[in-house]
Image 1 (tube, rainbow, N blue to C red):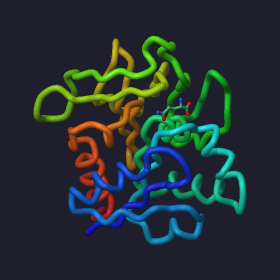
Image 2 (cartoon, rainbow, N blue to C red):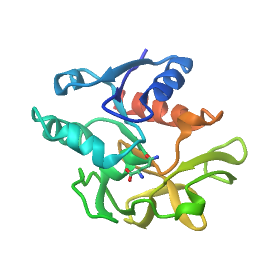
Image 3 (cartoon, rainbow, N blue to C red):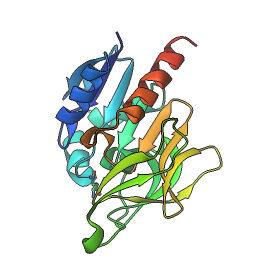
Length: 192
Ligand code: GLN
């Protein structure tokens, strides 16, 4: 089975671990930079990207994770997607610049803080359930990004090379297709 790390500094990491296990992968909670060694892939969960950044800025964790995401399959959800972006707005903050996109944090305003949508997507099997919580908006997606789902015309699920990012929380819904897509990507990269 594939060993998939879940960054477990803060946020919705337990739910990701449960979904991964239900799909036959071996989840491993990651709290130290050395624990990144030997993983087949990694999920950076949703939560608060500013809080995660604070925890990462010790023991060389930020630099270790930055190097990791540039070479190894990584799936960033919500706050995790913010960390993978090349440009972050509202407010500007440090990020790994692994995906060529601009994200605007907390972009949907207070009345739309949380929302569940079912929208058509590029994934087979009908409308995709998307759980948004204080979600960022991908306001610019570089030409190299493949857009797999949208909300009001803005990308919500994007893929480029070994990376996948979602502005929603696939681990909190009932739809496991996005995690399955990530595991397929990890397996494909492993066999290349
Ligand atoms: N608002 C959070 C941030 O800016 C992201 C929200 C989430 O991950 N659900 O980091």
